Image (cartoon, rainbow over all chains, first blue to last red):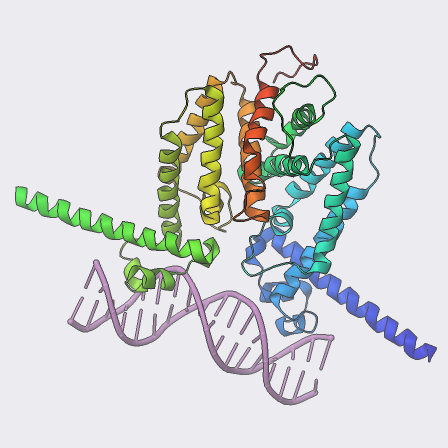
Length: 207
Length: 207
DNA sequence: GTCTATAGCTGGATAGAC
DNA sequence: GTCTATCCAGCTATAGAC
């Protein structure tokens, strides 16, 4: 019986490994051809199999996008959760922004699949989406450590950083024209949201 | 001779009008199906002609995208150049941001085609691109009226506003979760860039 | 300029042998 | 699970009659 169980595990492991190899090939291909340029024929060729064999592992093309999303979201969450070099809240926040930016500019396809909705009929499954939710929750905590707890300030934060990344990826791919503005943008954001010094504008701004 | 000239003008006008009608149909279709979902068959059907006839007006599909880009860029530039309701520089700047946001959220396809690069092999021609350059120049002037002249602050401005629009379009289409943060973001931006009050941070920040 | 007809290709997905 | 062979649909673009 242990033999049977072992065999089952072994097959399971092999299957998972083949599964992963296909997603590897998919990301490698998408990195070159763009997210929309992914075709099952090319994918199979790069993975060293034939197109129908892909269907032994994935039900449809969207299932492949979903697995790609899940993989990328997990990698992203792990990267964002790694230990930070400082325990100064401001520095942690800035470093998280730099990590986000590096992750996105490292491959435009990652940014498009994870943070924009550019594939026509594709919606990530809840399981694939879970790591992204976890990452957002960590961002909320990092802001809280800086004394920022309002929901709309979290939205302003995500808009501020994705805006820099978006401009970078769209208008200066491979460069740093916008990403080099991250630190100054973080300063601007904190100066606005942190009520440490005397209130600059007496008009009420609560939501 | 005047007859011939008149006939030529007339034909030219008719041709331009048919040209425009096709681009009308293209935008109407893209609004429903998404930018990538544009096909010449559907386009022709909506324009009341057949697919080959489209080639009497455009050399290729990318030529159609280019004409769509040109049309949208012109409309955008005109909208942004319309008279502003106030002559307070700050209010003009905020109104320009609201106009930009309304233009983009009005149709995600406009935003994608004009401000992102989501179509694989497409690059706008210089003629189609010209109005966009003009608009950016106007933005630079509006910032200058607010005492903001540094190049990197223009980049921060575009990132700030496109970030809000991008988050709005990607994560809350049809809503106002991010666009309602425009005014506060403008405040934040001006407070940071305008050196009116006492310098907040003595560290040098010149570029 | 507009049509019908169709070429030529590529896409996702399936059938069925092994 | 993997293959060959194939289906069927969609696409851009062209040929040629009118």
